[in-house]
Image (tube, rainbow, N blue to C red; front, side, top):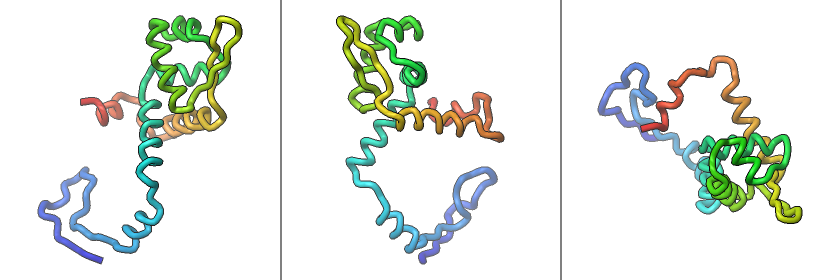
Length: 142
């Protein structure tokens, strides 16, 4: 274990230690359990897709029924082209699937895992003690 004195004392409310301690056993275990770069990138792209308001609304709407681009555009109040663009990305990431019925293309969630991702995130933000105000928005907005 390596220990270094932190050059700057920990200030109240900061997410840093008073001193720098490297626990070799924990670092080695983290390296052994680490995801490979390709898997990590795929995971990042999935969460990035879930980080868009329109895409979350689309996924939530498809939680309950399959819908076509026209229906989703009317629901979201955006153009069919914009919905199609979002669906293309969601389909590429295997979050939604489609089926054709004549001239209409219907979309649905790809599988139960997609539903679980959204529901678990929703459950997390609805936990007691989790702030429902705008303070969380400051984390990623510049």
